[in-house]
Length: 104
Image 1 (cartoon, one colour):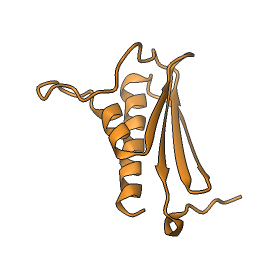
Image 2 (cartoon, rainbow, N blue to C red; image 1 turned 135 degrees about the vertical axis):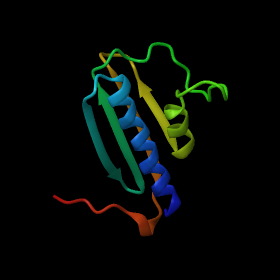
Image 3 (cartoon, rainbow, N blue to C red; image 1 turned 90 degrees about the vertical axis):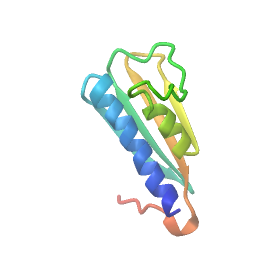
């Protein structure tokens, strides 16, 4: 996966940063692999996002690029804002050479 895995790590960093800045400062991160799909889910108990669209803000606007960046860098971004807090998940397609080794 090469650069794709680096992009995935950057996307996860953006989601975790959002938890620290907007989600109350603490949360939960889950990472798992199913076949060649790597998924990271980040949850918090913050105030939630409301009806925020994931879009690139205008060039003069400060911040508000994290979710857009996470969406652009991965195979997909899903946001669940239906309960308390927010849960955001990103996925990445792994190549056969880049599989993550699970420890059990």
